[in-house]
Amino acid sequence: MATVHAEDYYYLTIVETDGTKTSLTAVGLSMTFSSDKLTITNAYTDESKTILLSHLASMNFSNNDETTGIRSIQADTAFSIDEADAVYTLQGQKLPIGATLPKGVYLIRKGTKIQKLQVR
Image (cartoon, rainbow, N blue to C red):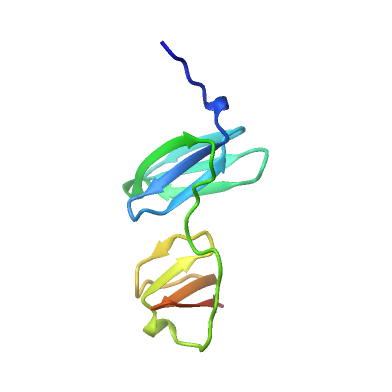
């Protein structure tokens, strides 16, 4: 019988129902459940992830950072949020089209073009 411990792995990867993956450094993690949310924080690296439990598909330990999302931004011409095909937070979380966005910075995509949007 093999025994596996979390400290044998470098990352905890959270997989969301839309396929987005976020990897957090495994050592120093704490998980908190509050109402319909799961918050995972790392005391050593200041990494943090909050997710609605209804959006959680799975979690797994691994030795690879499996984070997915937007890695680079290229915008040739500006377009409005009304023309966007998708809206993302800077953490790579996809938001519903037409959602009211609180103050912050977002990435909006139209086709293969991506641009940054600041809501004030």
